[in-house]
Amino acid sequence: HLFSDLERFYFLICEFSEDVVDIREQYPLFPVERAQAIATAIGVRYPRYPKTTLPYVMTTDFLLTVREPDGNFKSVARTVKYRSDLVGKGSKRTLEKLDVEKRFWNSQGVDWRIITDEFFTPDLIKNLGLLRKYSKLHRDLMKVPLHIKFIECLESSREYPWTLATCLRKIANHLSISYIDAQGIFFHLIWTKALKVDLVNAPLFLTAPVP
Image 1 (cartoon, rainbow, N blue to C red):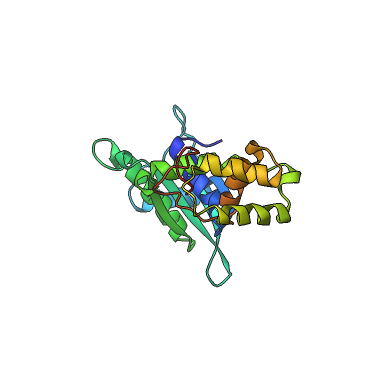
Image 2: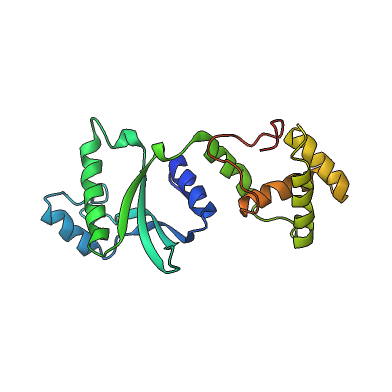
């Protein structure tokens, strides 16, 4: 239900973040009259649906509810764009509409920013795409005692120069679970932050050393 790969990338990051507690996509700039008034005030032609005089409903890619350090909650608006869409020929119209969007949210005291593809690393996106598949496991694999034993086994294996696959096979054997289940638990524990690894600069490969 997202309009671009870039939006999906940012969605994964928001979903993984412990500070984001709610995600709303393509949030409309209502009432339309307010957005129209802003466009008129700054001399920007308000967009209309093709071949009609009907005003277009402008949207913001993401309206997030985030938890602040003091425990309070606030809304922030984020628009996701490729950097190439913001510079050079053809960018003027895009920037005009973004200006309307920015002023719309700022008039309501909502922090608004543009997120570009420079915000992401390829490894981060690949890793989050992988981990999200393991955000939920079969109920038999979600037991806390099993996770504690798994982490203890993982901790005791750090002194050995094993690949991740070898390590998970040994843990699976020790805990009497399948290798596939051990793999699922490992990735799930990273997704839930029980295990902290570098997701930004290194891909999670089973044939690589234990991260």
